Length: 45
Image (spheres, rainbow, N blue to C red):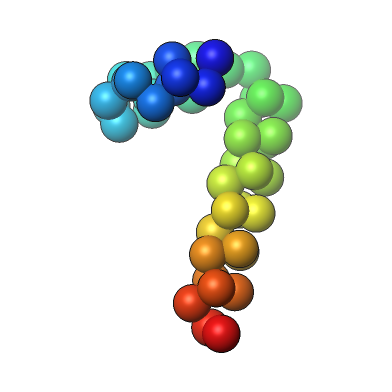
């Protein structure tokens, strides 16, 4: 699953995400938000 996502272009990835049920989209948004939070905390050190 993860390697499949890495092989998609950004546009293909966006299309795939838009076809997900809303609850799965929210999980994805939550995961991305957490990644961004971690990146920001690394930058601010």
